[in-house]
Image (tube, rainbow, N blue to C red; front, side):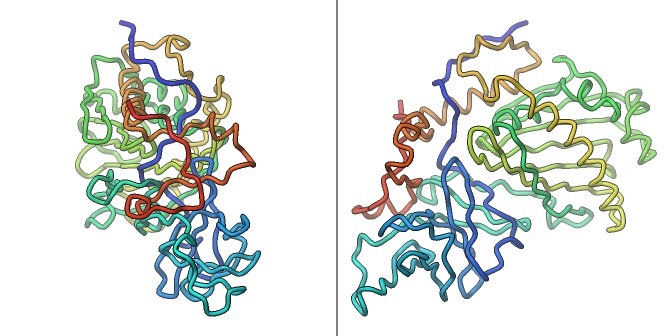
Length: 378
C-alpha cells in the first residue's frame, strides 16, 4: 500500500516554542560567554555569579555588537563594543556612557527560559507562557536505580535535522544500513504506532528465533522477546528503545539542535540497565558510535538535502507510516504559527536584526529587535 498525505509549505522548516539543547553543562564554564547558533539564529549563553545558566539573543540593541564576544561581569554579559551590560532576564543594567542614569525601558534583549538537565543546558526558544509550553522531554531512567547513563556525546552532522529525525523513525533502514548488527527485517505487520501529546511512537515485536542473529543476543547471552521502537517529541527529540528482556534494555536519546538548513548538532545520551560497570562505558559507546557513523554516512549524502515540500516528490509506502506522521505533526505546528518564515529572513539577511520572540514579549512592548517572521497561523 502506498501513502497519501497532507501538503506542507515549501522551504526548510524551523519551529519556535520548543526546548532546544544549547550546550553541555561543562561548556558553560562561567568564565566567558558562549555563542551558539540554533534555528539559524545566534544566541549567547552564560552563567551568572550563582552558576545559573542564561540564554539571550546575541545582538546588542545599541549598535549591533555581538554579546557573546564580550565578558561576564557579575550577573551580566557585557557588550564588547560599548560596554552595555545585560542581565540574565535580558534587561540592560548599565550604559557606561550615561553614567549613573537608569537605562531606558526599551534597553532589553530577549531572554529565554533555561533548564539544566542530563549534563546539558536547554533553552525554550519561543514566547509561550509556562502553562502552555511543550515540556522538556524527561529521561525517566536517568536517575533510576539499575540504569547507567553515558556522558552526552556531541555529533556535528552535515545534514538537515528533519532528515536525521526521520532516519531514527525509519524501521526498515536498519537491515541495510546496519547489517553487522544483525537487525531483523521489519515489515508493517510487525509494528504498531500511536500518537502521544507531542509526537508519535512505534514498536516492533519479534520472537525468540530472530535473537540468534543479533549482536544483542551474542553479547548478552540472553533470550526473550525482542522489542524495538522509536518515537519523537516535538520536532527535534528522538528516542529509540531496544528491549531484549527486563535485564537487557537500551534507551537512546537524541536531542537535536537545528543549526541551519544544512547542519545539525546532536546531543546523544545512551541509557542501559546491563553491563553497569563503568569500565564497560567505552565498549558500549564504541558500538553506538560505529552504528551512528553508518547513519551519518547516509544522511550526509541524501539528495535533496532537505525534505521535499511537495510529498509527491518521494514515493512513500506503508512502512513509512511513522515518518509520515512526523511530517503531519510539523504541519500542525506550522498551523499554530510556530514555523519561521525562512524566505522572509533570507530576503532581509544583513539588513534586519531578528530575535526569536521570548515570553517577555507577551507582557511588555517597546522592543528594539524585530521578532523573527513567522508563517501565519491558519
